Structure formats: C-alpha cells, structure tokens
Length: 430
Ligand SMILES: [Zn+2]
Ligand SMILES: [Zn+2]
Image 1 (tube, rainbow, N blue to C red):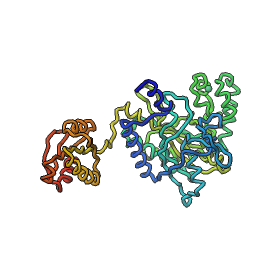
Image 2 (cartoon, rainbow, N blue to C red; image 1 turned 90 degrees about the horizontal axis):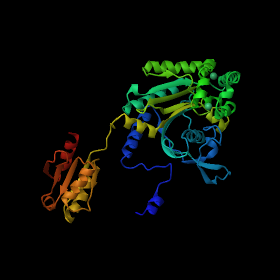
Image 3 (cartoon, rainbow, N blue to C red; image 1 turned 135 degrees about the vertical axis):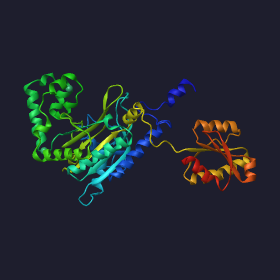
Image 4 (spheres, helix red, strand yellow; image 1 turned 120 degrees about the vertical axis):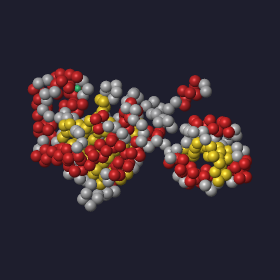
C-alpha cells in the first residue's frame, strides 16, 4: 500500500480497534461482569447511544465542562443531541420514562456499553471506551449501597485480583441538608487562610462546585486542603446513620476498606456515599478501577425532585491493563478448537456435514477449506492453537470414518462416523 492510502485508511484519532487478539479480554470481563451482576439481582438494560445533551449537564457540572460529542441535528423540540458520555443519566431517564418502579423495592440494572467523550487523544483518554456499570434506583436504604459494593468486590475477586491488590476507599459527602453547611465551613476555612494560593481552576470551583477542589492534582492545592474541615464532621444524623450502617454491613462481610475523608469524586450530584476501588500499578501509579456512589440528586435535573439511587462504573480498559500487568490469566480461556481438514472436493462436501454436527454439539471449529495440501491446513491449525483436527480424505469417505488428530501429542486415530463425536468430547474434557 502506498503511504497515501495508509494515511487515508487510518482510524480516527482517539478511537481504537479492538483486535481479535485483545477481544478475549473484553469478552472475559463482560462475561464475569454480567454473571456477577445477575448473581446480585441486577438485570441488563441497554439505552440508546444518542440522548439529549442536557441530560449530561449534571454529570459534568456545566455544559462548558462536558466533553460531549454533539450531533449536527437536533430533536423535534430543538434540543441538542449528543453521544452518550456516561451510562447513568440515560438509565435514570429510561427508568423514569417507562415507569419501571418495582413495587417499592430497588430496581437494579447493569449495563455493558460504549461511551463517547470529546477528550484530547492521549494515553489514558480515549474518545470511545467501554464502561460497565451497576445502577440501583428507588431505594435509599444503606443495604442497597452495600449490595453495590459487594458486587464490585466480588467482581474483582472473580477476575482473580487478590484482595490485597486493591483498596476500597469510602466516604460520605452528606445530603442536600448537611452538604451546604459543610461547603460554607469549607469556604470559610479557605477564605480565612489561603484561598489566594489555590490554582485558578480551584478558585473557580470554589464558587461553582467547591467539592471538586479535593481532586485537584496541584500540590499547592492539596497542601492547603490537608487541614481543611472534612465532610464527615458536618453530616446530619440521617447521613451519619446511613454511613455507619454501610460500614457495619461491610465489617460483617469481612471486606477490607478504609474511610478516606477527602474522597469526594468528580461528579457534583453525589449524595452521601462515595467510593473507589483503586490499585497500585507496577509503575507505582495509583488508579481507581471502579468508582461510584449514591446520586439521589441527579433526578432533580430530570424531574425536579430527588430519586434515591446508587451505582458504580468500571473502567474497563484500565482493568485490562491491570490484569495484564499482574500477569493474571483469564479463567475462561477460549473453547478448544476442532480444526476441519479436507483432502479433495468430495471430502470437502463431507467436511461441511461433519462441521454442522460438531458445531451443533457446542464445539468451536476453524478451517482453511480453500487450501488443498494437508501440510498447509495443519499449519493453520497450529496457528489458531487448535486442540484437535478432523481429517477427511478419499478413504474416509468410502469407509464412513474420520481421522482425529491430537494437535498436542500429534497422535491420530481413525473413528467411525457415528462415534467420533463422543470420542472428541472425551478428549476435550480429559
Ligand atoms: Zn445529611
Ligand atoms: Zn487546584
């Protein structure tokens, strides 16, 4: 290919292909996620990839802050449309729109979807990425926060990440009654002392969304915040009880956690519980791999009143990086492959019949049926790491048999047409 064609075909910056080599990681993480979510009573929901842009205003504080990818057209009310940058608002919208309340108990949803954000291309900021998430809507009780936390913990354990390789940090940021009081105390502290030394972003945030300043990466800002008042000290009785209950439930399960008093998370609608599962990568950097919290206030924006809800999101790409760097092997590797080999045009026809029987029995096959030599077909079998090969030649058609070749030992045997399936099953399970 010429350089010009190579340039012309390149995928869009910030987007990436999930190639067959990486795909088993994604499907493994997806499978374990849906199994774990279903084990905790969550059912899958899928919402459209395009929503009205205003739905995401509360996710990112303001429209200006929102990394939205807009569509050219608007909906029939003249409202802007955008690609989904986050799973939660669309699910809450769907829950309310379809009146999915569950007789006064929590409606639990999980999702496995791609998100789109207008991020500048960089190492850790893809414009399109996978997000898995859990959302529990309509229940304010601490039991529901606990279930979301237990499911996340179970997910990481089932992926083979040892308990001491991740850290659960939890905090409470209060409710619409006690959080404003806390923000007043915080602003007073900052005004009295060192507000002038905060970076310009934090000075802005002080007036619009003060809790965000806890996430500022600037050393000078975090130094100022070291002795700042913490949200826990301002909690009202209801918030205090809610938080204490979650901690008691977690203690009961033996899950290790730590209370991180300056954890606030970067979304302005959080209410009471916020948490993060983080881990240290071999590079020494500490990253959150799962984050979430209670977001009763998100519904304010949608319907003008609070709706209790709690959820989390998994950073899938980061989790795969982590598992690779910890050299964790997938527990469910691909199914063993039976490679179909034919020698001649009559044998090719019989191969199709055998292939139908093999796949109907739930086995995976692969083949290079356009090739004619045994040697080249065996080479392809080795390339896909086939466990067994079925070889059919002229003789096997006449005798009503097949040759079964063990690709590991190299041994082969001739088996009757009506017995080969049970022999394959035996070899594969053995
Ligand atoms: Zn409160
Ligand atoms: Zn700052």
